[in-house]
Image (tube, rainbow, N blue to C red; front, side):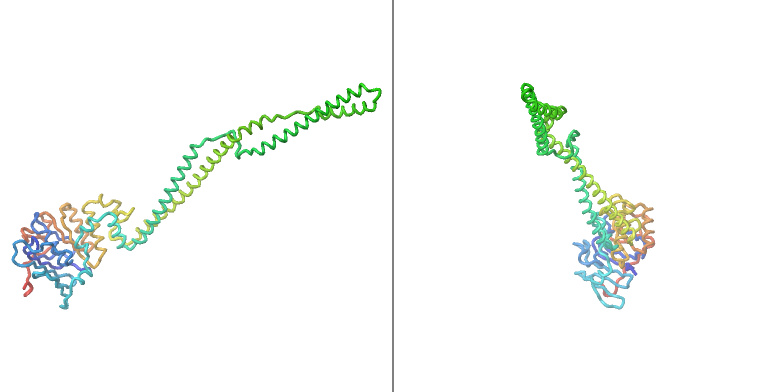
Length: 424
């Protein structure tokens, strides 16, 4: 069973003169009173009595007191815890009468239950880390967050490169009057040489025609003496005419123009190729970007499922982007009552053996919220001892000038009990 405080007796501690208190075992016990009357001194004394030297006030003895501080508490597990004498030495006695010390108390008392502001004032990241560690998913979530961060950074880099590729492609000119591949000067020269050879052959045939014509003329003049030569020349003439009548010379002007413009054409072709390559790479990077987005979303879903399946100390708690959330609200958006409920639930889960928590300054809560908070504490079988600047009926006891002046149920006021020989 979680350990709770059954009774508390204090003398000469800070502002406390003499206070004896029997807190309610479940729910909220409110120590009321005006400012500077000793309310917080009661909580400080409990911290020192149960938490040890780290909680010892710098000046524990009440101003003007002749006797040394006396602190005594009985716990629900049967332990009696005392501090007394000049050095306020600790004495822990179990139900069998055996003595023990701070180590035994530390085994079941939560430091944060004594010092809740340590949790309340922690950073959002530290609050989330505490929650994740106590539900046993901190390491898994840290690994998921690391994977998500790596994928996110990789996706961002790919997105930036893709944008650069698209911008680069958009800035490049597009040429529509050029072929897809660079033009080869050697091919153009070869075509030119072929045409020149053909034209040279044409010229040869033309010269042959001229020679035949001359031969015919000569043969005609010598017809009488060379009929045979004339007949042959006439035959050759007919053949030459047939060979030359359909001849047509081709122009090399277009090839010469292409040769002169080849560098300009190839530059345009290279521009088109670079633009197409940039657009293709941008498209491929977009595919990678979408794939990484899917993987990031999958990690986030797995992380949320891990949290949904975890045994959380309070319904509505979750962690998102390294921040503690309660019903979807971040810490700075929670009310004071919500913050206390979240902190109390988490601190209790850290060390379930500790069945109480100390709360200072509940002035921010209205009466309805106090009742709701107390009802929740009772449902959780959790004991809370708190202070509030008030003298209203919601207070279990009221302290004035270091003494209990009045109280209402559930706390019970009794005169300080002095064990014989205890304060010797």
